Image (cartoon, rainbow, N blue to C red; front, side):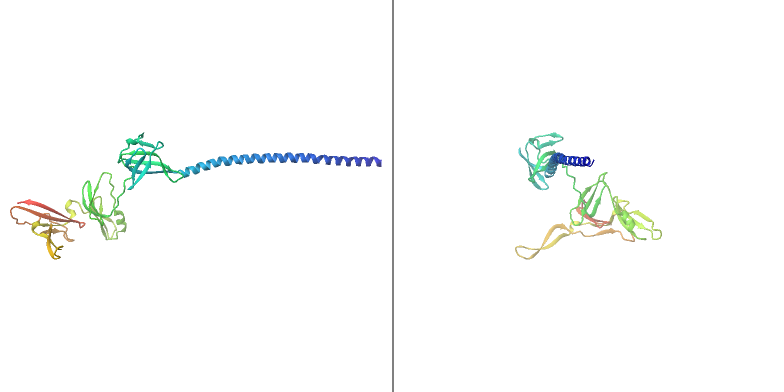
Length: 325
């Protein structure tokens, strides 16, 4: 009984050892297969990553290429044309644009050739900047008028005369009088709104609105704003006027130094001195002004009469009229 039990224990031990020995090769085989699978997976991932990198590299290179070849454009007036170059006046400087088969020339939405380009026409040049920072023209569109926006003019000054279709304006600090054309699209703007807000009770202010002189007043008791048009007729623009009945009676003489002798001498400037022989003007108390001058005796023959007018803005104008009595 004991021998049988020992035999069973010994057999069980031998079988256990045998199974243990067999398990090592199996484990080694499984480990080797797992390692091979991991290596294949790694290689597969590496190939996929490499493909993604290559794809992104192409996109990055494409974007970099677009950045390096940025689109540019400018406008100029044609001053010179040849088969291979185009000379343009761009803001006062001459710019040469190379021409070849890669440059498209257009006018009125139709392709043209270099011999169809007119001197003095306007060119809108579109192109790119290459890797060498050089401008390369790709398309040039020609037109008879400038595509550039018209320049804006802003100036402060004094109104000289106002007409239905124009006004004469003298910019501040200049002697030149400019004529501004008025059209149906002309928009007038003044500062009456700002004046009304800043006007104190009992105060008044003179402004110009739509070509008229307007007095804006604020009532001292009620603060009600009142507007009075001061230029209801043409005579309201006149503040003072005077007459020289014999304008050529007194020459304008100045003293100058003779370059040869070094002595002073009198010299006529070619003009005449205005002598105020009659006048009419407005005052604060009396706003009336006479429109007919006083009677003046005159000899028969031709004579020149000078009339000086000063408007309500202080601008003076002199007119010389020749009459035959």
